[in-house]
Amino acid sequence: MAVIFADGEINDYQIIQKQIPADSYIICADGGVRHAKAMGLIPKLIVGDMDSVDQELLYYYHSKGAVINCHPREKDEVDTELAIREAVNAGYKRIKLFGATGSRLDHTLANIHLLVKAANLKARAVIINEQNHISLVTPRLSVEITGCPGELLSLIPLTNEVTGVNSRGLKWELTDRTFTVGNPFGISNELIHPAASITVKEGMLLMIRVWEE
Image (cartoon, rainbow, N blue to C red):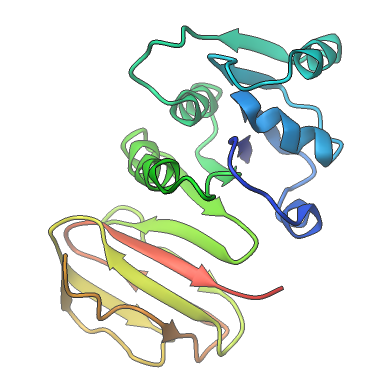
C-alpha cells in the first residue's frame, strides 16, 4: 500500500492515522510533508516543485533517508499527480490519498480527477478525509464495501453517461441503471448490509462514502 500526503487540509490526525497501514510506502507531495511530521511518519519520497514546503523540514527528512525528487515550478502536472506516478513506478497498485481535500475547491476537484489518472495507470487510488472516502467505480474497478448498516454513500457520474449500474446491499438497489451528468439521483443511498457491492458496464462513477467517527 502506498500512502500519499498532499498539501490540503487534515484536521484530525488521530482519525487519519487509523487509516494508514504500518508498512505503508509513504510519499509526500510538496507541502504534504507537514502532515507526515504531525503524525511522526518518515516518508520514503518527497516529490514536487517544493514551493510550499518548509525547507528545514525538507532537510530533516533528507537526513532521515527520504529521497527528494524536485521538479520545476513551471510544469504540466500537479504535485499529487507526480506522487501517484512515483507510487505506481515503485510497483504499488493500491494508493491512499490524504490531504487531498480542503477549502481550495479547484485543488479538491483536480485531486478527485486524479483517481482517473491512477486508474489509467492500472492502480486503484482512494481519497480519504475525516468524513469521506472517495473512490472510482469503472468496468474494471468494481467496488466491494464493508461497513455498517445505515452508513451513507453517494454515487455521482464522472462521465456524461454511466450505464449498467448494479448494486447489492443498498437501501435503494440499482439494477442496470443509467446515470447521467445533471441528474444526481444517486445522492444519499444507504447500506442495509455489512457487505455491499457496486458495478458498472460503461463509464465512471464516483462513490463517496460518508461517515462520522
